[in-house]
Length: 158
View 1 (cartoon, rainbow, N blue to C red):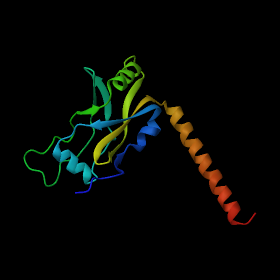
View 2 (view 1 turned 120 degrees about the vertical axis):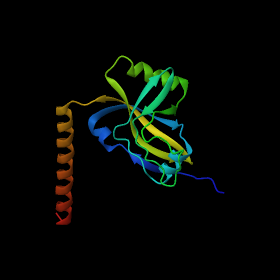
View 3 (view 1 turned 30 degrees about the horizontal axis):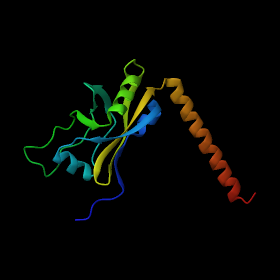
View 4 (view 1 turned 180 degrees about the vertical axis):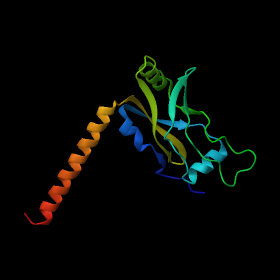
């Protein structure tokens, strides 16, 4: 059987970049049960309410929604359980020092398979204030309008 190559994105947390200022990103492996992997391979997951935390020198991912596997039996997994993230000790220590004083949180950005192994991209992030979100939306809208104006100008042959 040929090994899986490349990257297959299962879920992204698009709201995270709107709600948080992203500082650092890390790639972490996930400890999953068989039915969770099968459900992810079917492309079903949601990172919207998910968050990470450090407890006892280990990194955990909580409140990530991986629905039950359709063909699963009585041993199907709980939908929202805390799952262990696999990171190096140095990375866990670095994240812990950043998050412990407060103000920062661990947010999952995307869930994907890399060469057949389930991975999660996490970010150390700081929550944006309401006016920061409005300003970011305004900037995005301005750049979109400027690009549209340039495209129409080029289309007219000017």
